[in-house]
Image (spheres, rainbow, N blue to C red):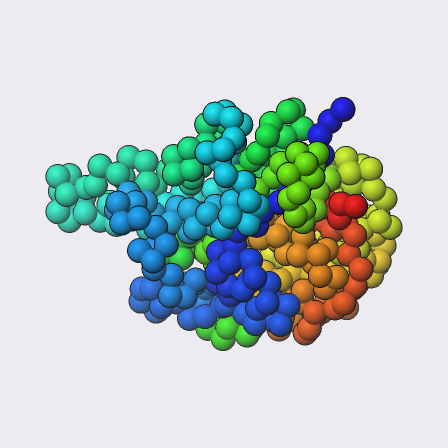
Length: 404
């Protein structure tokens, strides 16, 4: 029998809340975290508004020895992992030696650490470059540092697939649980609100250059002009349902279904792969479209990409056939951290019977979506679908559902 993989711990680091409770309170109230960039002078850059985590001081959360070894991305991830493990009640030290693993996703690695050390190299010479640069910039740094700090020696890894990678990491953790694993720490955290990171993201022409925080990120709106980058994400503790019940753990929900697809080569005229990902994820969860109570959209805020996503949702659920939300309008797109944060929000929506809103958006009628806007919508949420797309054609879909 294949074990059901359930979530027993949630850790959140987001522009509108540090910790799951703060994030959820802000999100259900429609309180956003987008703001003019403050950590450096962004006036000369094409992106001047972002989802920064205000007032985050790593020294308040982590041992001082870790600060010079880690990028901001990893510092945020370590805080989220600490929250998730504490929330779950899992003590890794009390588990068998190889029982607990970690799988995270990363889109850009440690951009701030990398840029700072390359600046030292060019300006002051190689003798001034930190030895920690050899790993602090690396995509796998979050998995490695979480594993070291908590003594995790079980199955581990890192996924790199832009926004879609956040769901892919959760899916890999789910596979490990279904194959007999005990506990997994999984999700994604990124932190690219730094010159190098912003220039990299703006290169593909899909980011917003707006200065007005209330008009900067408007998915499914006729005024859409690109997405706003952000930093943060979520990490979850996942374990077998039977083991969670046996120890009396609180269960937020099950990672019930997942699928990933790729878009066809441009110019072929073939349909994008998102609809197929939705259908496969529903089939994997043994659910029908009518069983899904809300869709958490990828929400690119690009007229063409929004149209493709709306078409995929409508093809499966019918026009205005299911409530759709994009709470990332309050945080920005957090690269690999965005989808795990949406999964956390979906689990909290199941718990509280409340669909968070998509803020500032006036839905464009041609998309034919039942978009939840302005304020949270009370609803029974038994199952939720989370969508994520990565640059150049990655598509991932995950179904989470309540556990009786």
